[in-house]
Image 1: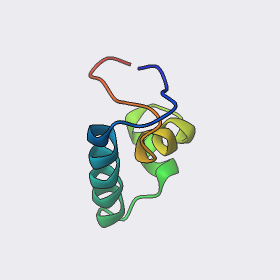
Image 2: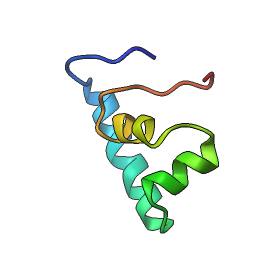
Image 3: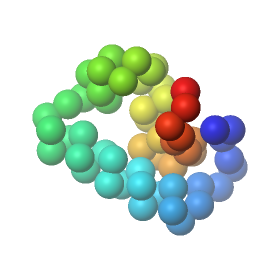
Image 4: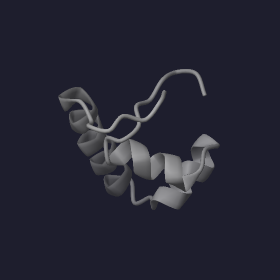
Length: 57
């Protein structure tokens, strides 16, 4: 998904929940990125609400 200047409320709720889940699993952003096959920058962008997520890569 393309990046936006302002995250939507839905993206922000998702970002908070994804970070909470990752941290409760004891994973760093780098570890989660490796497991998902994406860059840690992408994880950071998703968790900050800058970038959305989709089923496709």
